[in-house]
Length: 529
Image (cartoon, rainbow, N blue to C red; front, top):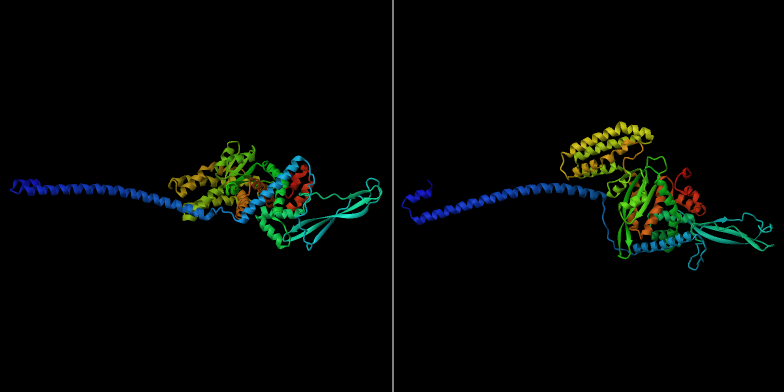
C-alpha cells in the first residue's frame, strides 16, 4: 500500500491529497525525462567515440600525406609573366618561323641562295683572334685549257665560333684564280654548313644548343654572356639559329627512336611541363614522355623524349607503334592499354619502397621499417649481380631473389590482415600486392631491370631545368626541345661530352649522306649499327 492510499483512509484534507498526487506525477515525468536524456547522452557518447576514432585515423592519413608533400616540395607559382618571360615566347616564334622555312626548303628539294641582307649585321669584333683556313682549288691548272692559274684576289668570309668562355673567329680564305687564255675563274667551293651563309660556326651552334637545352639557360642569358665578351648576339638571331638547328637534328632524333624500339625491354615515364597559351594569356599542361633502353642491355644506352600536349595513353601507343617487349612503368593507368596489346608489364620496386619509406619517415612505423629491410635485401642481390653476365645474374636471382620475394609476399599478406583498411600502411601494402605479378617478373630473367630509376634519373635534370625556362613557348618548340634533348641526353648516357659531340656532328652533318646517318649518332662506336 503506497502513501496516497494510506492518506485516503484517513480524514486528511482532499486538497492536500490532490496536491501530493500532482507532485508525485511531476516527479515521475522528471525521472522519465532524465532517463530519455541519459539515453541520448549515451548515444551521443558512442557517436563521439566513433568520431574520435575516425579523426585519429584521418590525422594519421593527413600526417602521412603532409610528409609526402613536404618531401617532394611541389607548388604552383603565379602565372603572371615578366618581361623576360614574354621574351621567351617571342624568341620561340622566331625559332619556329626559321624552322618552317628550313622545312619548306627541304620539301621543295632545292637550296637556292637567298639574297643576304647584311645591312643590319654588325662586324665581328676585330680584337677576337682569327684562325685562318685556306681553301685552295684541287688543281692549279685550268680545267678548260690546262694553263696555270693566276691568283687575282681572295674571297674572305668570317664565321664566329666559341670555346667555353672564349669567342674567336674562323676566317675562310678562298683564293680566286683566273685563266688568262680562256678568261675563266676558279676558286674552292664554299664549305657546306648547317646554316648556309650564316656567320655561326658549328662550335657556336653547339654551344647555343647545349646551353639552352642541356644547361637550361634562356636565350637572354646567353645574349648577356656573349655581350660580356664584347660579342653582340641579338636574341632574334639566336632564336633563328635554334629553329634551324632543330630541323637539322630532327632526323638523328627520329633514328634514335627507331633504334630504341628495336630493344626488347624499355623504361617509360612522363613529366609535366607548362606550355604557353597566348590566346588565353596563361599556360596549360603538356607532358614530356621519356623512353629509355634497359640499362642491362649490351648495346649503348638510348633515351628518347616525346613531347605531347596531353597524358593520354594514346600517346604511348603512338610512340611504341606496335612494339612488343617488356615495359617498365609506374602505376599510371595510361599504360594499361599497351599491356592489352601484347606488351609485358614490369612494375617498379622503387615505387613500392618509396611508399614504405614515406610512411616510416612520417611516423617511424615499425611495419614500414620491416618492409624496407626486406626490400633492401632484394637490392643487395642486384648489387651483387652488377657486372655479371645475363646467365649468372639469372642464377643468382633464382637462388636469392625469388625466395626473398616469396617471403616478402607472405609477410605482406599476413600483415595486411592486422592493419586498418585505408591506413597508410594498408595503402602501401595494397599497392605492392596489386602489382605483385609485374613486380616479381624481373626475377624470372637475368636481363630485366628491378625498377624504373634509370628513366627517372634521365628526367630529373629536365625537371630541375623547368625552374629556369618555366614553360614551352609552343607545341613546335616543345617538340624541338624534345628532339635536341634526346640527342644530348643519349650523348651523356654514353659518356660523351655533348658540346664536343654536337660540334663535330654539326660540322659533318651537311655533307653526310642519309645512308651513313648512324655514324652521327651519339654512340661511342656508332658503326656497330
